[in-house]
Length: 263
Ligand SMILES: NC(=O)C1=CN([C@@H]2O[C@H](COP(=O)(O)OP(=O)(O)OC[C@H]3O[C@@H](n4cnc5c(N)ncnc54)[C@H](OP(=O)(O)O)[C@@H]3O)[C@@H](O)[C@H]2O)C=CC1
Ligand SMILES: Cc1cn([C@H]2C[C@H](O)[C@@H](COP(=O)(O)OP(=O)(O)O[C@H]3O[C@@H](C)C(=O)[C@@H](O)[C@H]3O)O2)c(=O)[nH]c1=O
Image 1: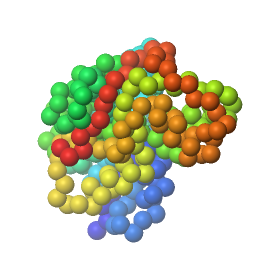
Image 2: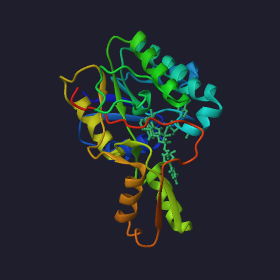
Image 3: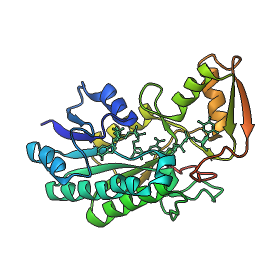
Image 4: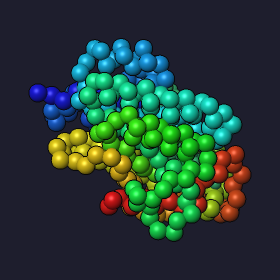
């Protein structure tokens, strides 16, 4: 029998990548992809509509409020989705015996640790987005006995959504000089690799439950990442990159987060 999998927030960069890679597949998986318009996780009636129609074995939650800067100005919007919305989804998953696979972030950590963060390290978010995501994790842990929370970092898709990769490409086409910060260190993660990791977990019957860390291997600053993006797109010699320590933003960002993926 085919496993039914609900993917929420399907119009985001991760949702669209999973759709592109797996919507038509021979893996014995049957996906239902729903955008925010079809299923708003802050609206319990909207959640009920889909969960009453199908029996899902898994729910991959890609729905989130991801605007780190706006979250600082209007934290209530981030908490509404990333905490309350997740609480709604977790309750429904409990009621319907659906395994929730939720995506969380490196921004739950404060970035003060020199070594990679393990799943046993205490989160201590320093911005509103990170705080709202941590509250979402806590709701899941309080409501569900079995769940998967996958923390990842600096997610980008070369094709879909809004992310640093696409912002840099856009800017390189319109601006002669780009000013990029060296104040944070992390691991950019391609949505293709995260999508494969998630689907492999579903296919393995013996996977662990709880919190997992997943990110791509290379550790770098945003400046290094911008340089890499320009080189990969043959734009390096046309665009001047300027290193700055302080790029002015509303939200604080963790200085140094590498996720230990072996825990
Ligand atoms: N982007 C990153 O760098 C990182 C992301 N993550 C996490 O990974 C997950 C996927 O992120 P990513 O694909 O980048 O995010 P995106 O912002 O690309 O996609 C999120 C999607 O969720 C939708 N959404 C927003 N509010 C609701 C709601 N109330 N109900 C249903 N859907 C909603 C958005 O719709 P709309 O656009 O219409 O609002 C959007 O389509 C998120 O949990 C994020 O926190 C973790 C680490 C890094
Ligand atoms: C666009 C731009 C940004 N920056 C800086 C600002 C900031 O310190 C850093 C990253 O910028 P962004 O705002 O694009 O990235 P940001 O939104 O902070 O990315 C985060 O998103 C959330 C959803 C996550 O979960 C995190 O893992 C992380 O990926 O780069 C520059 O220095 N120059 C630039 O031209």
